[in-house]
Image (tube, helix red, strand yellow):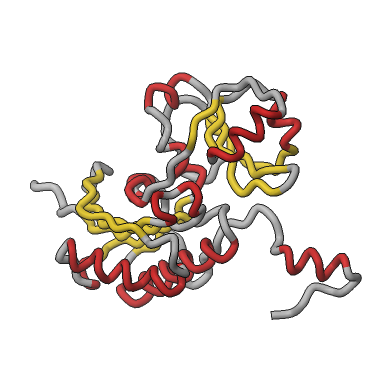
Length: 241
């Protein structure tokens, strides 16, 4: 019997604008039943514009470029964080809305997996990798990956002090250029790689992950929003929705 037809995936990556070309990307991909992914078209989401203003028009232009209609979409894959609070929230909300409207599957791709795929395959195969995202002041969100096969679920994660990360040489590190400079200034000796987040790698990772419920799916945040933290510090109860 012939193989089933390939599925069309819309991929969204705006989670960490400093780590993505022009601040954000969207892509259309064709994924085979055997998880082979072919990128059909990509577009950048202008860094100079607000994501809530630019994302949907960019997706519309992308679909026109690829001659893809809403009914053609089988999967909506989104880089779900951690990342910028507003950017991740807009990305996931947009992906959920499109998934509900088109009845496509929704795949929440943990952003550390997207970053992992930017590392050379030979390095990933031979060394443990620590992806560092959402760093703020003196600590950062770390996701650790063992060498070899790509993960099919969220990796082990924790918030670590930057001083602890700088002393640890057990993993290759992948993160943004500014944090690489910061860690080196603190004496870090682990091998470091600059992460590059792409919509193409969101599409590739989505082929390995299970679908999410578009009604209950939520972004991945390593910390509570600063507004909530400040509210608590003022001695107030957590504001209700």
